[in-house]
Length: 129
Length: 416
Image 1 (cartoon, rainbow over the protein chains, first blue to last red):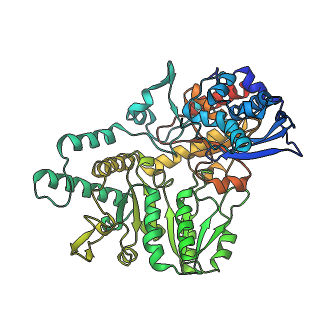
Image 2: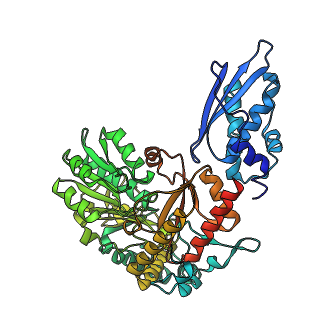
Image 3: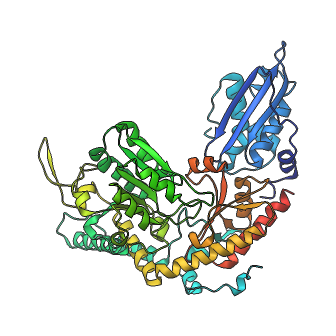
């Protein structure tokens, strides 16, 4: 458990770098995890060369879901939208660096689910893989 | 200053009771004992219940009601004796107790059978704002199908039912009031006696969701004069997979069948059937026999200890927990004062999401529930996406509330 709440997660939860709303934006998508009450929205600005010039997240949720969204939005900034498409569940979990129970996996993966649905219209069953 | 847990006075033999529940001795992590504060979701089981079910499967199992062989007669006798115990526990006659899968199915049975036969477009059902999804969604389904209106009696600021508003809504002449006896989130115990009297005066029948009350307080259907009562076994020391709907005999007699199949019929030909007598007309197919027997054993166990002692114990624990929780900065306790509730205390902690609270508590062995506790509209009304809930039962120690508080201090330190 102490691994789960590593300093990185707590820091990101308390002092997120990418929390906010982009207005205007090119892409915005919102979803929730109704069982937990976690809500998440991701906004993206995309340049003419197809790169994500700016990314931000907003919403409410547990430390895992919010830290995951913060790390993800920071990571994808500056990267081509096409490249981000192949970013996987495993990549995200590696970035978080924690072991998660099946229930908490949903919290961690909400950000990726929102990104994929918003950016590519891909609705994946990430936990079910 | 709160009285310390070492001076907590137990109105029941707590050490003996704890030794009756084998699971309470286990560790949840190496060196970390279990502190089970999630009994409102499901209670633990005493040896007597586990043994009764095991003994039934070892020595008596057969299908009930039809065969004439010895095992079938024994199994039938045990099953019907369990029904008698459950009926007596709530002051009902055995024929008025329909076994279902759980309290949820009991409410669905009433909605499906009584609701479809008795409600017409434009009729009103009056609910409260603190209903569990199980006493909300079945009525939503019926409302959509029959164009029935749903009205909701509001809460007061302290989390009690607003009786004035309730009386005002009765002027709309609802056909049914469907209401909980004890909120699974706020812990509030509702004045069912007064609710029933007012509802009957307004011409409405009353269905009570007693899933949270029957396990913890003395409930008598005749004294309360309720028309339906839904409750379940697994929250009262019995197994999962069985619950019951109590209905007044003359109301049940007028209701069409729920599920069709074996056991619920007296006679069948190719195109029609004649339904069986009460309560079998609502019990199609092979029922949960071992579960009924286990439930009967649970009722015996609880009645031996006494519901008044159990309630006194839990209310004292709730008062103690509320006092201790209020010592923590940034903690907000929901619901009314302890004297108006059962052993359920929900709270929020500023800056820490309930799921994180629950996860950190688990690391010190404390099992609580985090989320909306199947009451999403209530949480919306309270403006909270989720809460953390600690719930108590006859086996809960005041020291276990100390463990909860210590765990919350750990959470606070981690998130500092």
